[in-house]
Structure formats: structure tokens, C-alpha cells
Length: 210
Image: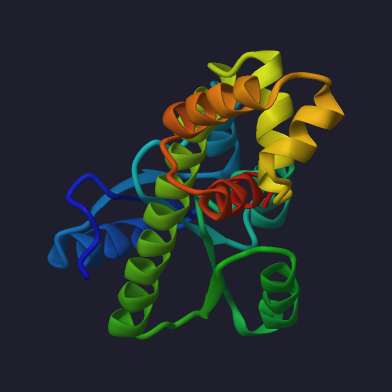
């Protein structure tokens, strides 16, 4: 599956030649890119409130004057952005162990310079697909949280017990309400949460907690 047309690859490298070459390579595979000459430039965008809404990934040089790629990665990780904005480190041979460590800490991958054009773009496309999946999951979670917000306190009480598999009679006893009232609340919960069974409701709530 090809990445969506609005996908963007961010390039952060202090070498203008590398930035230009990468931009051209990505363009040849019909991928949009946006380049930054140093980590500080991208950090400024980050501080401006960058929140990925479209599939994206970051090609990030490990060693740069001033703020290093590693320091920028840490900022992204602190903001919980490395899932929606996968990071592929561009590294020299000496930095491979460091890049491997960053992958263990959440980076998507690393490519050693000089890298294979096809191999790099293949990983970029995979990173963009990962980003798209994460963003879709985040949007779905937002929708579900919106549905939860529409529930009354009593509906939430009933929902929690329904999700645990309790029958209406036991729910009524625990909440000191009538079975008929439980049935009404249960129906409203199913309608608002757009589910058809207690099992489906339990699975949905478990996904929300993940």
C-alpha cells in the first residue's frame, strides 16, 4: 500500500548536499519532503505546537553542530510523538551502536551512510504507513472518548458492570435500582457507544485503556 498523497517526510541534516539529494530521491518516489538545516530549526517547529495530523516521518542526522539528532529525538520522545512521527536516524559507521540504542528506545530505524536509495525509501514508506496507522488509531480513540463523554454518571456505572459480565439482576442489586432501570440504561449505553453486546462493549473499553 502506497503512503497517502498528503504524507510528509521531514529531513534534518546540516549537510545541504545530503538534504538536496534526499529531497530529490523522495520526489522521484512521489513523496513530499520538508528540509531543516539543523535540529534547532525543527525544534522551533516542535515548540510551536507540532502535532502530526497527516502521515509523516523524520530522517534525522545523528551528529550535527549545536543540538544533536539524539537531543532532538529525546524532545520528541518526551512529547510522545515518536509513534505518530517515526524517526529514522541517518548515521555514520561510528554512530551505529548509538543508533541501535535509539531504536531500542523507540526510534523506527537507522540507515548507515552511504545508504542504498531504494532501501532507505522502502523504510521511509514503511514508516509513513506506521504513522498513518497510529494516527488512525488516535482518531478512533478520540471518537470513542467523545462517546464516553456523552454518558451520564449512572450510565457509566451500569456500563462498567455490564462490561464485567454481570447480569441485569445483579447490576440492579449493586446499584440499588430496578431491573427495568438497568435495562433502560443498558440500552442507552449500547446506543451511545454504538455496540450490540456486552462482549463488544468490554472489548471497546479494553482498547481504550491500551
